[in-house]
Amino acid sequence: MRSLKKDVLVKVKGTQTNELGEKDSIELVTEGRFFIRDQHYYILYNETCLSGMEGTTTTLKVEPRRVTLNRMGTAEQKTTFEAGILNAGFYVTPYGTMKITVLPSKVEVDLTERGGSINLEYELQVGQEKISDNQLEITVEHLENYA
Image 1: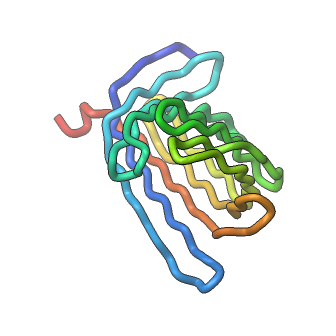
Image 2: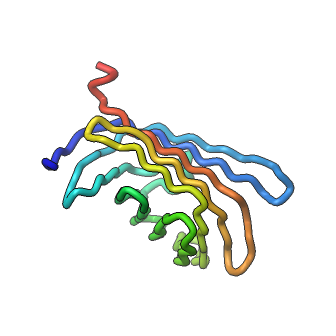
């Protein structure tokens, strides 16, 4: 697989459902970079004030059954999403550090050199307490599709 670096449009839609069944969604559309290295896809984009993480760069390393999210900047976090595997880590913000755990039930990857989508469904825990069921949908489209 050849290495390519492309400017892309990254759409990130996150939905949280709390224990009362109340849903909260946020959608971010931004420009980013998309490339292949060592037969893995990478998606990079800058967070905005909409996500509450302005000054943070998010990198997604995408493998067929595993997605690793790495945030660096004003917020720092490294989380691996692999169906059925509990992953614990720390979420570091200017306001403090929290231990977070994710338990993914779905990790769907549909990416090619042309772009595509990632669909993650997971339980989010802070400390030892379940906070919400989450869905994260990420799509990547080449900017020339909008030219």
